Image (cartoon, rainbow, N blue to C red; front, side, top):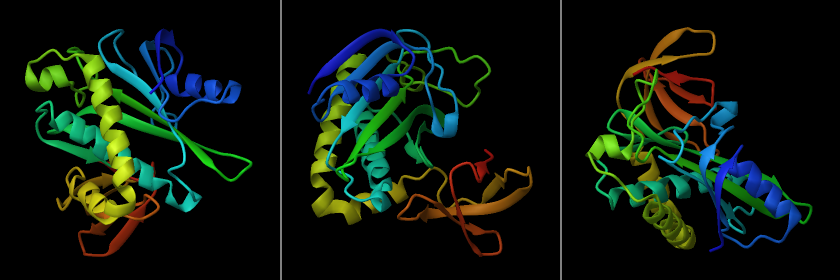
Length: 242
């Protein structure tokens, strides 16, 4: 594993993308930063982090996604690898808030952003961005945010966490071909508020009651309405209210 440590950068994902364009970067090249000035979340959302307190990392993954229809498989692998790493540190009540938020109880402690590059030789390289709130304890105007430190009253070593995640990422990727069915089932069972009837909001601000039942093979959220009708939603087509 090649590890590039930076003091400050606009985005570790963008830095790693540029690195792969300039040179032949090896699989599992990792970039970390103490400060990220233009961190990104899903669909252009902003990811803010207190300097030096949290784990900000991007990992290059090659030769896993072989077809564009399978891109969501990497989301499953990364989410489960992060969950496994945090479980080993005794972080309580972990779950995955679709599509890529990591939750402890009802608080968001991290997020994942995966960006795929489709090459001229038909190969697909993926930049996996992971942001985890580790030792930050103040979250101004973010009532649903928390950190590993707040959830456990413990200070954590970010380097230990980084290596845990990379090791679990490698092992989960390696097991995919033989354990894909059980990994997909594990991901589904880990979904935040799965099976709970609760309110959701559409982009037009209308509210409806629904219950999460799973995720499609291409990453859409599967739900049942309060009348039992099946519903599918893409990212940003529905917002959970909790």
